[in-house]
Length: 389
Ligand SMILES: Cc1cc2nc3c(=O)[nH]c(=O)nc-3n(C[C@H](O)[C@H](O)[C@H](O)COP(=O)(O)O)c2cc1C
Image 1 (spheres, rainbow, N blue to C red):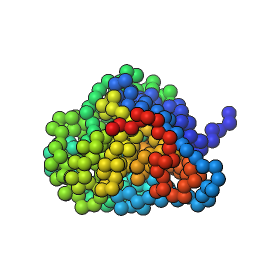
Image 2 (image 1 turned 60 degrees about the vertical axis):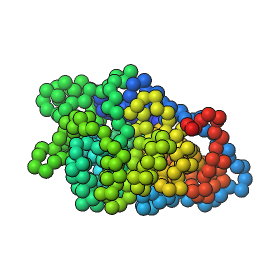
Image 3 (image 1 turned 180 degrees about the vertical axis):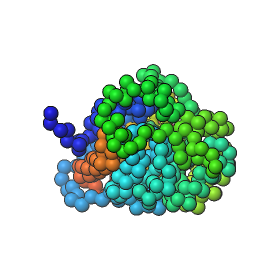
Image 4 (image 1 turned 90 degrees about the vertical axis):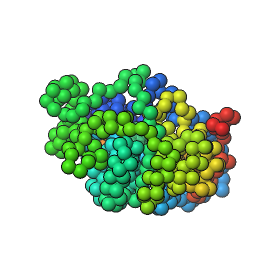
């Protein structure tokens, strides 16, 4: 049988390969989403509603994608969004961080990630650590201080999580830890994906379902679900808490998950450097509109005061260009790189970043732009009623 070319030509193909390679529960954990999946779908379809208005001659032969985000010069306007996902690949976030470094961009590391921040910063010195609001102020600070000591060069605070449970297409069954009874229970799903299993065996590892960045000194590293339980039982933070955390962090600070203009203004008042207009990739409150629909209003309201980014639904370079034309400085990607990681490890994530870079370049060429910073709504055909007021 002919060997499959490890290179893939689209994020859709990376997803197909991830589906074939990963045991079903792991694949479903990446699909994620909530309830009916309205938001997860709108995140992607909203990009399809936006049209381009290209030029035919006088196009630019030099095209730059360089941007500065949270004080870091990046070679393309695409960053790695933090995702707390385990068991996709033995190298996990280290492979993602190396891929981002090799392509000149920043790594966002989730506090629910499977690799310690110290190792990830070595793999990519341009790492932003993402924290949620879990436990007490002291507990949040312990993780943040550890990230600072490790050399993280930015902090991301994600607050848009409402612990929604239940998906119409079924939630994956994820074990608390891997032990003998679990191995027996999951054997059929795992044995049906021999190449995934071989990868773990040759790495001499079992999927580790712990969250090392949430470990407390002198206590065992918690499992994903132990830490998740602690988060769920934490009272949600106030705007004073946001301002307090911001004041504790000396470097650039992003609030991720803003979708309302009023909240964007409060984030500015709290002193953030950047916000990401985001609905957590459709995993939070189902029925939220696509993040790109909230982008133009937020960019117009606060884009001159803070850096406005977007995440949610980015699957191709032209999506990135549409977001930038509507006011984003850069975008973050989630599932796109997770599919790449599942399909081909570090090279798969690099493949995804290369596809996005190529797609951005094609769109810039067609639009006659020589720099991503020149993009504007004039490059798009935006249907009436597209944007949220
Ligand atoms: C499986 C999965 C896990 C995620 N975990 C986190 C997380 O731990 N922290 C966080 O801030 N966002 C998390 N996100 C949200 C992403 O950072 C990002 O907002 C989202 O994936 C963007 O949408 P996209 O997947 O369509 O690109 C997660 C998303 C997915 C799909």
